[in-house]
Image (cartoon, rainbow, N blue to C red; front, side, top):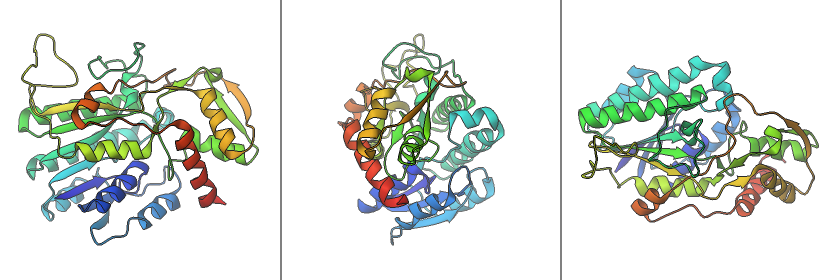
Length: 333
């Protein structure tokens, strides 16, 4: 089986490729290595992936000709679309970057999949699609029609586009709503990364909503395990689908959406104390109000994921942060 992974130099993408190659898959990776954050970190992730079963191409998914040529010259069975312009706050300042990558790019991937008989498209959505929802835990059967950031709106759009292609062209698509992924080789724009950096350097960290936040932090290895187990779990049309009372997570078409989170939300201040413990220094805190586009809490209902793949994330915050801090010290010091 040949698998294409977009966003190959990214945090999740590079970890997924490492697992796939170890498991014996033939993998093609693409990435445009943009400078949204440290390019050297992306290049160093790629260096870890050098293997006879892995081929990398510097391609931007928003470049339709390059995407089309790649598919035409390779017999690709499964696509893992992990490329995206990430970040909630950055989307408020630079909306065009999100439209280009998350909408134009994703449409190019969908078109390539349907014209090349791809067996299964798995793509990254986000817990941010739950937006203004207050019911906890967030369930895939809940409506997600009130996004509070452009990033969230593009991810919801990905789900809508995927469903349309599943319906029109019988393309099996699986969307994964990631919940605050963290771990070694992570993204520098994520809070846990900047918290660790600033605590180690004795700098102040910004704590939004006066610390009254909760997140369903999910360790990278658990995310990877979920993705890999879903590769051969192509969605089938739901025989129980009710057109009068439609379930947003399934369809009459080969379409499915899952949450993938730790299912154990952690208070932000407890998270910070865990980082302090592993760094060995106390944080200097600056309390600030809630930021535009942010949400107060996330909490994943993962019952349908567990039923499908027999797995649920189980890495504790203490274990996961310990591994991240160890990596951070070894990489930067």
